[in-house]
Every structure is written in structure tokens, then in C-alpha cells.
Amino acid sequence: MSLARANLQLLLRQKPAAGSIPLIQRRFASHDSHAHDEHHDDTQYSREAGFSTPFWRNTVVLSLLAVGFYKWAPSPNQDVYLTQWLAQYMTPRDFWAALNEKHLLLSQQASDNTILQADAKRPNIHRYRYPQ
Image 1: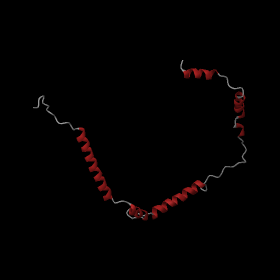
Image 2: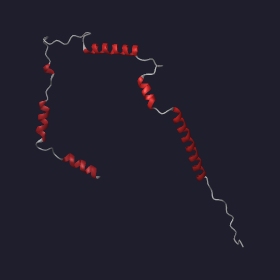
Image 3: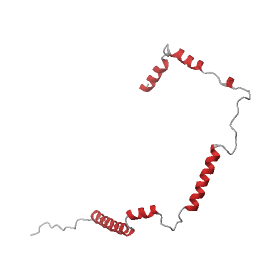
Image 4: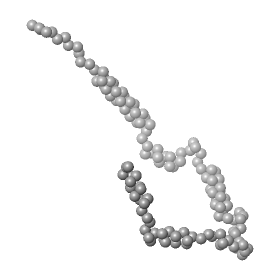
């Protein structure tokens, strides 16, 4: 019998502590059904559902903002201040193209060197038994 199975059987044989049974019974006994809380008198009114609720107010405000942004936003061919500011701090494309090309050439050279070393063989040596 494995140790885990023996421990499981030992745990199953233990009786619950004397104080835990009333605690469990008290916990389940303290919970009652809330079905009796439902009242059927008409004294409470729900809020009026209409176009004056916060949902519709927020929808109208967001719609107006979207229309205003669409009308006064710059067209795609215009340079916006943010675009100009970002372009001022960006590195030119030519620099990155030259750097990438240099990296490609160095990587190719390193690959060629690795292949050359991996395929290298010692030269054949003809050893003579009596060279004199």
C-alpha cells in the first residue's frame, strides 16, 4: 500500500472535532430563503425609462464628440504637430537601411566562416616507413 493511500485512509477514518459539527449546523441554519421578502404593494416606483437617463445623455455627448472630431480633424495628407514632433526625433530610414545591410553582410560572412571551419579536413599525409 502506498504512503499516500495510507494517509488518505487515515484521514477518512478520523472523526470531525466536537466543536465543528455545531458550527456547520449553525452556518446552514442561519441561511434562510429570501422568497418571503417579496412585497406586492405598489408604493415603490421604478425610475422612468425614457431619453432622460444617463445612458442616453452619454450616448448623445459621445456622438457629438465623434461628429466634431470627424469634422475638424486633420486630413491624412496634412502634417499634424504631433507627427512633426515625432519626425524630428526619429532616425532617418537611410540610416536603418544601411545598418541592416551591414548586419546582413556580417552575418553572411560569419555563416561562411562557420561552414568553412565545420567542413575543414586535415590534409592527407603520406607517411613513409623508411624515409631515408
